Image 1 (spheres, rainbow, N blue to C red):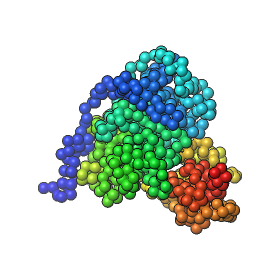
Image 2: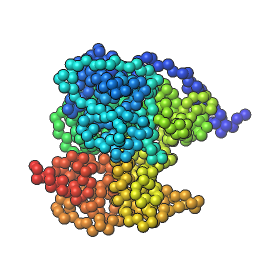
Image 3: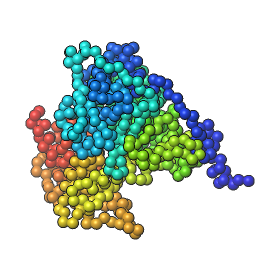
Image 4: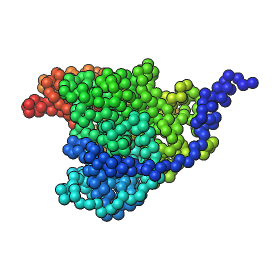
Amino acid sequence: MNSVADSAWFAPAWANDPELGPGGLRPAPEHEFPSDHTLHSRFIERAARTPGAVAVIARDRRLSYADVDAESARVASLLAAHGTTTGTLVGVVMDKGWEQVVGSLGVLRAGGAYVPMDPHWPARRLADVIAAAGLDTILAQPAVRDAVDWPDGLTVLDVEAPTPLGRTAARTAADLPVTPRDVAYVIYTSGSTGVPKGVVIEHGAAVNTILDVNDELSLTADDRVLGLSALNFDLSVYDIFGPLSVGGAVVLPGPEDAREPGNWLSLMAEESVTVWNGVPALMAMVCEYLTSSQYTDPRSSNARSALRAVLMSGDWIPVALPVEIRRFFPRAEQWSLGGATEASIWSIRHRIVPEDTALPSIPYGTSMRNQKVFVADTLLRARPTWVVGEICIAGIGLAREYLGDAEKTAKSFTVSPDTGERVYRTGDWGRLLPDGEIEFLGRDDMQVKIGGHRIELGDVEAALLRCPEVAGAVVTAPGDRRRRRLVAHVVLEAGAGRTGADIKKAAGELLPPYMIPALVTVWDALPLTANGKVDRASLARHEEEPDTEGENARPATEEEQTLLSLWKGFFETSSLSVLDNFFELGGDSLQAVRLMAKVREELDASLPVSALFSAPTVRSLAARVQESRAAA
């Protein structure tokens, strides 16, 4: 007779589940995709049925389905003339704008797969990704083409509004046939060795996710999705192809709107946006803006009443945030989505309800259609209820591979010894709850999430080691799930005279802004544990030595005095100076919104939130306040 303990382990709650059985997942039959399971096929059908409907709304242009159809076809013809064919990878390096939609569709229609990159990446990182992907053709906006320092040997083609003659010119090449098993896009994420890793996603896998979400939201041609995410962040795949597959429209803010929640609200009001899709921090910025400022746009009620769905993913959702969203957008259903770039945007979802606010965290959810998210032990066997394990993903959403890296692919994408099914090990930890949902518990490795960006600490460390005179580097991410920042600890070569600020500046030439450490501390030697390893816990607790120059920097003007007083309400530190950096002190985007609202109130200076990002010290921000007053 089994004991109670034996019963709990040998006959767990999921034993009779139709999808889960003892020892893990039941093998899934090979999925056959319909022939139209490609990212662009439904757009082409919609363009033929409703050519006059609005497809893309940007700050500088409104494009109908007929416009996007014709212009993406011309891009496809241009690419074909330069050698693009089925399976060719083409880089898309653009600022936020309608050109991203036309360019990405053009690549797909030429039979290729698009590789999105940020034009504001440091030249070295951009060159590394271009080389890793083996790219020889890039699509760019003319302004980006002229501004970027391109590697030798590239063909850079412009995507721009057609001339009157160009509008009437017939395309010279038909769409190349593409199957659901062909590659649709490759997105590069942070890599532990300092080299970004390219996640290869096939058409069918991505379309499965998009159709599932569209069905869940009952998305129609009347919907408009606000496209906040960067093209090289996979949430943008839904922003574009979700609405365009049902005859709806994607609404794109301009590059200048990146940190301006007031501008997002105005755009939502103007264009009757119905679906919000983004990381929780951005929606928190909107709620904070509405709370701490007098948003008097007469169309604001339209923005609030039109929004019917809020999708949040990519990071922790603060338990109190849904309450704030409900306060300002009472009609909007709220969804928590999760997964990985390696599993086609999302694999798990949870509809947020008011009762969730009583929980310690928002539930991660249950598996999406044709995907399986489960909590496993080291042998990939499903864990019983309440038992912590690694969150794993199986099903048809999995990436094909990491481009050109069989070793990383084999390490992350493994095969269940029981079922033979391919499984992605996320590195996230969680546990199965009695109601069948999964609770997300975080990570216990060298990967962190900051502001929705997945960052490998090893990637940052590798970049620091490439900086002149750096002999050793360790990066930590102190803080909690709500507020975390990168801190670097470096050891210099003998005789080197560089400061932490020097190293941080050098790192900025290798890393994108969100990966640059907020603080860089120079050590004579790094602390070690008893077994001789770097004591990361000790480093995480270390506080940077006070900056003598900063301590001696006193307010010189009335504006500086007022701003310094405001800052003291944000940071628990014994001393602040006018030279301290708001973000290096631990400030985040949410606090930036709150601070700038106080600046408007206390100093009668209407500055955008982005002003703080470009002038992050009291002294520099005070100068912006004076300039604003002089211009008024």
